[in-house]
Amino acid sequence: MPWRPGVDLRALLDLLAPQDCAGCAAEGSVWCGACESLLSVPPRPWRPTPCPAGFPPTWTGPDYSGVVRAGLVAWKEQDRVAATGALAQVLRRSLRAAIAASPEHRAALAVGHPVAVLPAPSSRRSTRARGRSPVGDLARAAAGPAAVVPGLVLRRRVRDQAGLSATERESNLAGAVDLAPRAAARLAGLPCVVVDDIVTTGATLTDCARALAAGGAGPVVAATVAATSRHGAERDRAEHPLP
Ligand SMILES: [Zn+2]
Picture 1 (tube, helix red, strand yellow):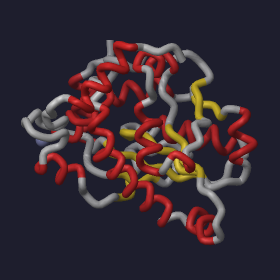
Picture 2 (spheres, helix red, strand yellow):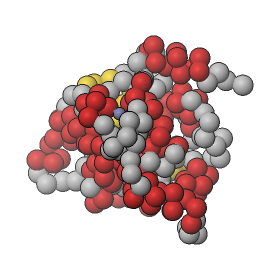
Picture 3 (cartoon, helix red, strand yellow):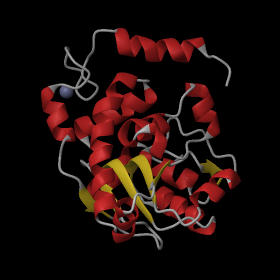
Picture 4 (cartoon, helix red, strand yellow):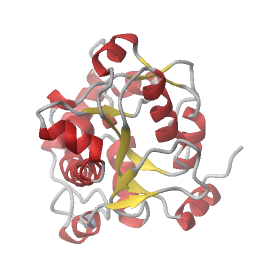
């Protein structure tokens, strides 16, 4: 990947600069105490309404609304890389809960077998434009680099995700996910956890689970940082009406 000084410097400056809270812009730290406590809710099982067939068992953290939503948008769209740590802790809790709730995943770990963590894919264009894959970075920070298999890819061009609402992003990616052939050999029969920053309609996680099953991977569960409430999904559509 060519070096992109603009993008790299922006990310570096975010690490070095005096911080405003990613959630509420209060001065002083990358997450203020109040916003961090809103992030730090216990993980919960979650499914969308309506629920797509094949949606994997999924655990998530807080509602995607208010300062949680503002923080996730700042982290992803404004390169607030310093915000990754706190978001990764939320994802780690969802990940642990998803694994603990799955007998197959627990059984694999109990006998020392690996469980693969797969970041939901980003559009190649958005990854290139940013010079990084935010969800990949988040997955490595949450699960440790060794557990992460970046095997889920997009098999067709999708619209650039920038400027799309969370709901639009999911429908933009639906049906586009594939398993990279080299990853398929590595994942044969292996329990998998798909991770993403947000789940809204469930289309992306369902598509990732379908691609993994088609590629011969083992049972699939999913974990995300945040999830839209039904009310949140409606507001998301209202604030970002489709063209
Ligand atoms: Zn705050």
